[in-house]
Image (spheres, rainbow, N blue to C red):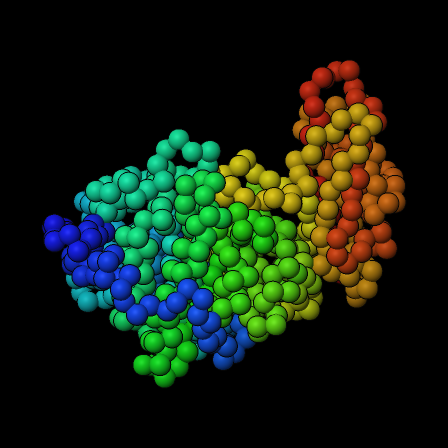
Length: 518
């Protein structure tokens, strides 16, 4: 059933096709909601999480092809015996529709008459996915959080995913014609939008016994008309405070904490530009777990840690499944990035867009085994024969990641006799390993000519023996004592440009490959 019209003291919430949302904007404003400056009580974790695994509910469900037992196995078998202590489960719908029994959000695909037949069969048989996930996680001793994508925009380019409420209320969306942002992103200046999102979360925790909630702010920005994010940041803070207040009430009823995690940008400046007032959220005790990053490799763990440590809030840098145009991430790079995050002070590792189940249509076979090592840097280093550390590189500017990759070194254009500097973070002490490693520096240079001359220094030392290894690739050996644990500075300069091409030479990749020989 769709919403009808009511007296003017009520508002229309078109997202709920099965029921009416009874609360008006006016009534909401008059309710006893927490004042915007109220400090909440944090809910400290009962146990540390070495690894948080964000499960993309869509992939594991689709790859099961209607077999419920296979679906359960897809989620949990890779976690058995791993370092994963908490499962952040997304139902696969994107937060505007639901892949579960909901009175607030319509079932995914209902508007386009494309409901997944396997999902419909499950629901008709009384098998509600969140109930199953919670039961299976708790049987295995895992904490399970509902991962809520606050502003998913896949419906911008997958029409059947668009919810009825967006069709009926285009004024609730950002719209076209802006410098960034997908047109179907919701405007959180609209009270009805904030109300709808709160009601969806409220329902989840009224119906299901999740241990916590993740608000995934990276799915996705912008939340306001581009350029207005800082002005309206308080609206997201107020919404988060309202959600926190509800979770606290549910915690009292259950007699145990319900934790709140948020996922935000990879540095605080990007957060500010996107309207995420992280410092205020921490100050006011709104969050229990802080997750950072959604694709960039270099995450400013230290600056988040400085804010979070005094409040006892753990920080989890996001190890993404295809970061910075490395698609799909190879095991040596995954290990190198994880070691960096541990070295920078991460309290654990958060895995996103990671598909370790055996019949995965995406992902890499190594990923299940890797999760048995990644939660301990010493164990990880002992089990890796190869490591890869790279200078972060910016992909083409994404419409829904307008402020990410702010501090990337690459790509870098090489102009004659003009130095370009890049950073390679190395989270391992390569001078003190049980087995001496072989190190190779690798540069990929677009439009490289065979007789070009490029000078490279690594931490101020000249890199000798730079050789053409491929049409666009230069390599050179390094010694372990040239590499420091932390930030390594690489300087690159084109000293002679071949007259064979007048195109700019551009460094598109800068990598340190490490191999341990038995």
